[in-house]
Image (tube, rainbow, N blue to C red; front, top):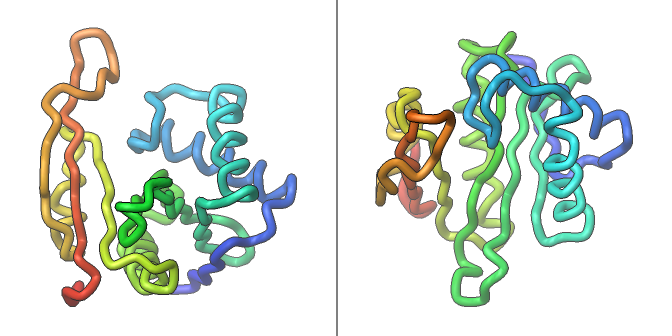
Length: 176
């Protein structure tokens, strides 16, 4: 595996463009990262720029996995912005480029997040997923446990409501 992780890379205009392109490609391949296909860079850019602002100004952090210098995996460490929840954080926009699927990059990205999280002062990780895509098995294999389900919370299309599934990983528990 030639995946190299960088925490908080310099968000140059070029890297921003590449992350937006990744976001578009992931969404259009069926990924559940805040949009429903089909999308264009113009659709994703406003959300991406707001996300980048929360990273550059803090308190959120960016993890990027590079393969041969190209970003192919991304996730956001999202701060809870609430003192009583400062000991855990949420992972958002977990993305792996569709052309790299099947190489273990998704699992590697999640393991890297779990490795880095204690350095952020976090004792646990939270992630939500869109039901109906089979993602529950992926997170369960990584040691996450389902801690809640919001029925029909995500409307992906008229007449197509999906559960939002909440997962939790205690970082003092070993993950596979």
